[in-house]
Length: 310
Image 1 (cartoon, rainbow, N blue to C red):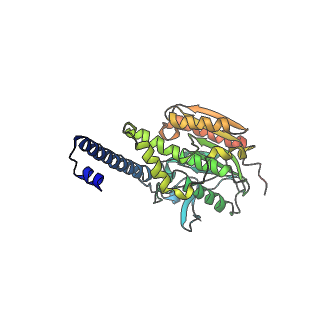
Image 2: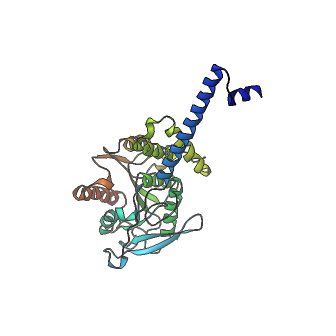
Image 3: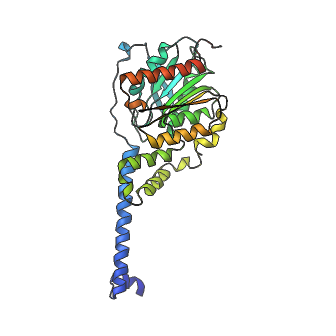
């Protein structure tokens, strides 16, 4: 009691110094945790600007397809029909993006007779909520595969997946566990959602403040405690043996590019690695057309629409 009293009302020089240091440490802890919490909130609730489209006037004759998620809620996507009985390529947008941002890739795939499907992940585009940077998104992508496989106008046993960063993580996760995935292309993918948190913290410029990175990681792990036993993608990557895989890295996203190269090196054959100057989201029209042709050619070789069996 005497010690506590001395700390509350210091009388000696040493006690005053010690009390001051404790107060400073407490202030630093509160400041760092507050900054980290606010930063994490911004990361997990990115600004949404949903783009509205009238499907009745859109090229490709898309239709709305609602499908159930594992939690019982419903999600809406757009199905672009290709050759009847052909495989379906699901296009999974990236972090801070939405389905409208990848429409030209879907159109390019449909033109080559693929069925194509896209939707908004949680916390993006038209879908409300808080993103988990891949955990919950993997389940959403799995639900989309399952819903489409029940249609009678697609090849229910052959799917292709394309995903950018967060969508790439989800695509890799699905490919390690679902035998219906027959081809896979991922752009600047990462192996663990915690990695993406650190990328965003670094981009914020707040890593100069000691403890922000660690506190952000702790907060993210706490919020996603139910996924604590989910291993990194690399732990199960060997299960994609025999699945054609295209890994794409870009010079303008070095942290994610590094993760993508690591995943490529650990992945079994068959696989390819491509390096671009810019990531897909930031490409100009001509670069984007070239990129989309590259993706379409990959799927044409790995998952030809005409070679289907019913």
